[in-house]
Amino acid sequence: MGTSNWIRLAKDRFFFAAIIFFASLTILPLLFILFYILKNGLTVINWGFLTSLPKPAGEPGGGISNAIVGTALLVLTASAFSIPLGVLIGIYLSENQDSLTARAVRISNRILQGVPSIVAGIVAYLWIVKPSGAFSVFSGGAALGFLMIPIIVQSTEETLKLVPNTLKEASLALGASYTSTILKVIVPTGLSGIVTGILLGVSRVIGETAPLLFTAFGNPFMSYRLFKPANALPLLIFNYALSPYHSWQNLAWGASVFLIFLVMSLNLISKFLVAKWKVQS
Amino acid sequence: MRSDTFFRLLLFLSGVFLLILLSAIFITLCLSSLPSLRSFGLFFVIGRSWNPISKKFGACPFLIGTFLTSTAALLISLPFSLSISILLGEYLNNRFFSAVFKSVIELLAGIPSVIYGFWGLFVLVPIVRWVELKIHAAPYGVGLLAASLVLSIMIIPYSAFLSIEILKLVPPEIKEAAYSLGATRYEVVKFVALPYSYSGIFGGVLLAFGRALGETMAVTMVIGNSDFLPKSFLSPGNTIASVIANEFTEAAGRLHLSSLIELGLILFVLTAVTNILGDFVVKRMSFQGS
Image (cartoon, rainbow over all chains, first blue to last red; front, top):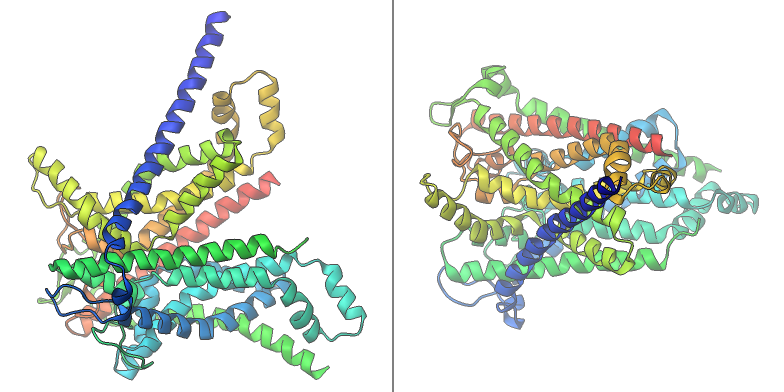
């Protein structure tokens, strides 16, 4: 009896040690990756890096201003159509839980969520680039928008489901129309969740490279035009990482740190919002 | 109440729009891969040679590359992601520590694919090359092995989070019952928590697999981009996603482009099926749990 207990306890300790070992074996290298990127990138970043254009191959210095502008344009274009659509679809789903159409929409949304980003790029290419005959910010924004919609739909639906039904009934009982009940009572109550979903959507697509390869395409110059190719942060990282020039690789490290910083801030803000404005259910 | 009717209609139409969008994506992909479907039919998936010059397109090397890298990545990452989730779910009651662990994982989940590829190219590939030199293999560095390693690092956060959620679904009563019978923690995890979550974890594995299948940039940067059937796990290859990323903009002719789009269609169907299956398994588990 005594020995078997001893063995059981030893097994327990051993298992705990193994778990700790594997878990730290995971966390440590992952932290190491982060430090490696920061080490290479932070030294590059300064004011000129953010405000000037990339220099030609081999010349030291230069910056990533065109990629920052391009990424901003792409995200704006994507948001312009994916936010209203996503929110409307999310409201529709939370209002119609069990109808056949709603179920079909929910499944489609789930499938859309799993669509590999490169496939979104192919579709945007076939729908916009090919007919218009030019790579453009617009087509890149469309590809990113396809990827944002399902995230916004899901978080909108999940938040609005938490809004207590009594709130809706109270508003309707006061004589408010269905439209104003939704728009002035339900949506404002769930606003934090909706905004969080939007931020998460942006943070997911802001680093996407694959769908931009054959839509926004990349551009070594500054471009503000919607129907012209433009550079983007992930595109710049991809192109310069594979280049043989040390100065371009440095730009790519700097851009990586900047991009990680953007994604992190978006995630932090959305976390903060969740904590602050949680729907009380 | 005409405005209400209008508003309800607007909501309904936006829902229907999503259905149309998904169908349109599917139909577009099908239509644009017609030329390739007509020329090669089923030979597209079993053909071994991908040659834009002789206009023969067989996707077998890429299907094998995709399957091998994703499976290997999953197998490599599983012990790590499971230990993290067991540690966070069963052992760490300290809120501070689990918050730290979770933030680190979240942070890593947020790093864009292209940056993992960049890091892989500059750190992982030289390490793999060094190992290959030591074992007297051809020192490419880039190849299926490097791609699987990068992929496995990338899916660890994702599958760890899924497993944490799944382990949470184990009813505390049955764990408490086991403890009250004098079971050790290890015994509770092994005989109660894990058996209860097997199907859920399997679902999570499927979802992670779906993620790995479609992963493009990091793989493209470290896999070596060879269109030939990989000879071994160390040789360069290509996945479905990486070949599209590489060749799409410079596709030579209609048939080449159409073949690449058919690859996209295959990828779309594969990931959709994997995700629906994974969702189904996970949901059945959570239904059981509630």
